[in-house]
Length: 447
Image (cartoon, rainbow, N blue to C red; front, side):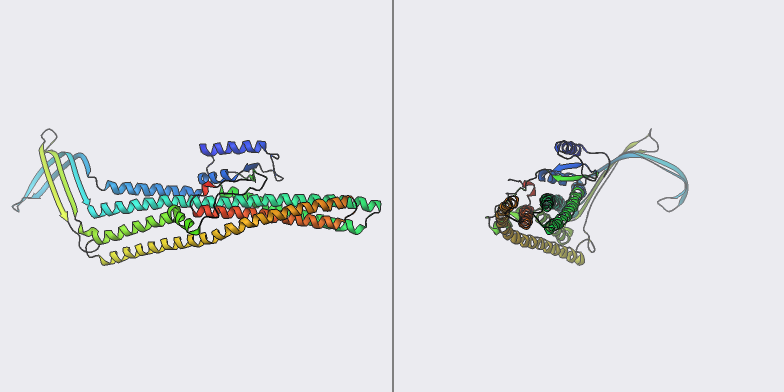
């Protein structure tokens, strides 16, 4: 990436710095700056800074230029200039005799010339128009897939951050248990076995905490890479509470999804345009040679021995031609080749539609299942929290044992991880469906 920032990127950078100033921790353990980010910002940056999207933009601009070139084939060419011709020595007269002649002539004027290859100009324009449409649809498709990759990475970061929080809370509970057991052993009201068991659990929780920190750092690095950040940074989700995306209507029929995808998915639009372009090229091979090439020219000049003695001179030409053979009439090999390419383009279109149908079928069921999983996991999380509160109360009053608190804490950590996974999986399913419908930018979050 170049070191100079574009204005849009500068605005985003300023926004990030403002968020960082409001963050509770300005630096991570390894000294990297912490930049909070949300889903909306991540999706916007995905479209602005992705090299893959930039390459597709360049391809679309090139296709527009090629279309403009095909329009220019309908225009005549005009030239103007000065020409000097001189001959010295022997030449041959029209009667056949040889003469020694010194002569010169000068010409000043303009040439208007036009050559219309009607079949090439017409069918190339129609084909280039579809190629331009295909390139623009490919740009949208690249943007869509990039945004989907960024959304996956963002929710992986959210889940990793949640796992980090869960592991930190579990380690804190274990630390409190170790301290309580130590005091109880010193007072002689608890066996040393309880303290050893609590220490073992603490070390286990600390190992899980280290693993969570490592996973969160990896998720942050992946998201920063996808966003093409210029410097090493640590990204962290702005919202510390898991949010559920509610954009896709799970009650909508599968056929409705397929109809919407067929109308709006850029991958399908690109293949439709490619098929149309291939068909125009095949038609050109069949019908184009029936149209003749037409040439016309007019040379209007002043002609004479020198610039002081020029006289008007005009030359006109008109020609009509047909080509027979390669590139023209009866070029069977070219006709078969281009027809086969059109058939191949149609096969690719059907393949893309079949792939989208398969994904839509899968995600239509997944949305309902994962929605139920979120509710189930939320209920289990509430029960696990109440169970830990009861276990801690029993332990504090001397009625319960430390093992009860350990079991309840592990159950709560498991329930929290299951809830986080359920929410993230549901959100990812929503994003996948939005991508299928060609509208991932409409993703919103709600508590």
